[in-house]
Image (cartoon, rainbow, N blue to C red; front, side, top):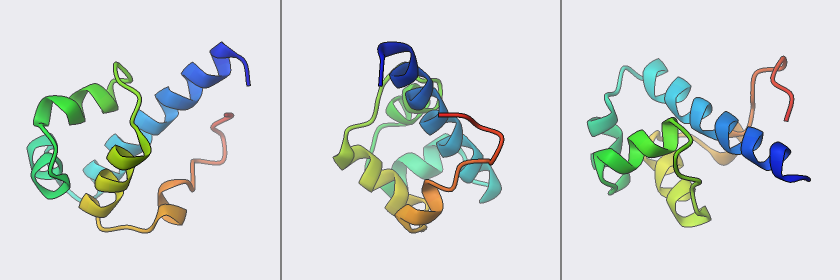
Length: 80
């Protein structure tokens, strides 16, 4: 994967976090509290200003109360 593909993947991960959070009617603060993160960190993840570590992604997925398989079920028209 080249650098542009990595950046696109990070962007899609952020979009997925936002999508799942909004589906659950959660604010960024709600997700931050449930994930034991700072609200600003959630904002940076969703806007792709920060790439999540595996540890952070684990916390987010658990905060969303979903399985990893669900998180990575990207919209079919998203090319990564």
